[in-house]
Length: 311
Ligand code: CP
Image 1: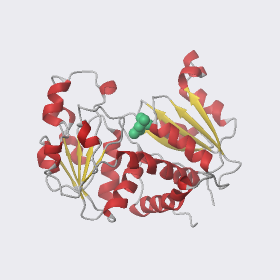
Image 2: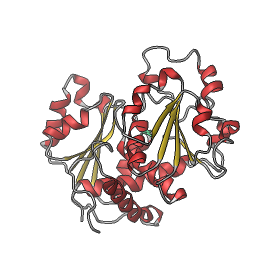
Image 3: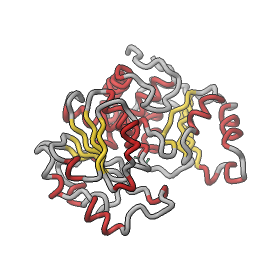
Image 4: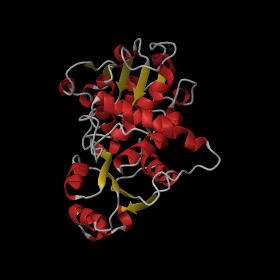
């Protein structure tokens, strides 16, 4: 397998080229069938060590990085911050240096502060992969979203993607905006004025529009990506009540009718059913939410393989 990605770290989508993104997706396609085998294991990363260092809660990302490492025969170690020496006051830098002294090949990190993976990458000998840093980026989520979109739509050029909801606090939105516009898609972001800042228009040179009208963004969309209300990042009231939010900004079957007939629905999870997404939409044939989770394993296998210099 030719290596399409020559960096040590994966810190964000922003700095990647379209060729690098396609290279990672193609590598993930090669790994996809391993998860469908009866024996879901290949020796590709035997002898490599991966540390999952999660300072924030996670189900999908942490589990799929662990499964990805194990399916490639790497040794995977999960560090839960609540039972680590971070709870005794050890600093982030000391924690990183301590882990680095044990010679891992890759550290996968999630943190509530933007820029933590970048800080770690400066001091660590191991490759660093960003599993979500504050409101900044979540690169592997955007890559698995792209893999799901490519499965259904084949090409990105000319595709209309609506990203809806709590854009302000969403690292998923930022990574997806970078990825999708680099690959030639048109992105419309929409949500309540307080959660969709106009400043987002400056995020990329072209291909992005910002609106406070959900329906406007959904009209004619090929892909509708609805985002979670991130209550944990909201230190003030951005909308009156959750029930009002559901009425004005929730994705319902009625709203979805405005999209193309073959439009697919994505949600990065975890979902707030009945708030940003109606249950019947989440469980409909258009919903690809569980496929996103499935492709997450293949994408993370590809990222670990490329970051650890796998051949
Ligand atoms: N999408 C996502 O990052 O989910 P988790 O928080 O469960 O990892």
